[in-house]
Image (cartoon, rainbow, N blue to C red; front, side, top):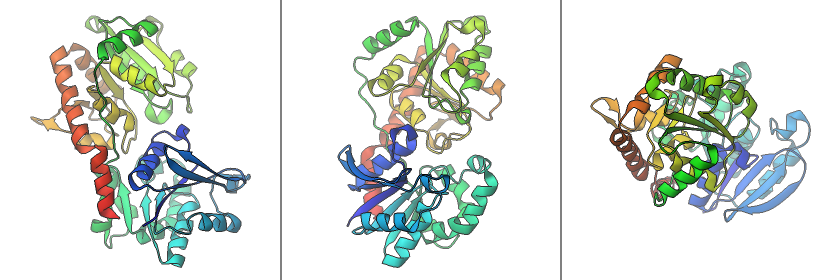
Length: 386
């Protein structure tokens, strides 16, 4: 059988979405049809997977694939002419109703992978337009999909109000995206080098924020919570690294949020790529994300894979499936709410915890990732579903 992934502008700048589409493609040997701005058509290869890029136009209505013009739809039809199954990522654009129409016309199948599109937090932004789209196109698109795949149980629960109940129990499924557990040998030398480059003492306990600098992910709130936690004398040996590309916030916005007394302990290092991400993970003692919404949360899962305990907001859906012991989150700290005081308390506990406690929480998380988020498990799950 021949499978295709269908997505919008397949580009590394799209972070987790780009990564998950790539993982689906690698698992199923499925080429990618990427629909984006412009009018050109091209084919390239990424990680051994063919990517066909079709430009949808240059005006606002077409360049974002809000609507697919008939000529573009015909080009897309031709690109997937031999497909037995389309795996369609995201919602709210013209590629979704196009895929439904293609499947009905060809008598073939498609899967819907909404990612975070049906999360109530996301639906609260431009909510009227999104709900109109869901009523006009989305409900029928989701109802006719052979399968609807979500990356966590909480994400599935949030999506169910928009998915028609018929057959929902056997076609609406959780498939955890894969995260590899890296080798940890050489950690001491990497740790020393990273800390030396950024002026962080080797004895300091280092907390890492890694993600796009966007209000969704709350980097400014993270800096404020860290500074509030650090007001206690015993917390003076803790440092925070903020790493990530600009979003609706910039590195300068984050730097401006750092109180003067803590500018030598909060390090804004910009985007990290390739081995630099591994260096930051290996140099850190813990990971923090106060994000409003993470339906999967690659950065947090990757931190666990490096053996780091995590401080996570309740918006991290996957965290609610992670191990608990004696009624307590076993991989670090899972916050009960988004209040600053709650984050401050967790940061203080993290800094005050013994090395053995920190290491034990990290070990639990790494073992869980190795079992539940393994690439082999992901590939086997998809193979069983097709």
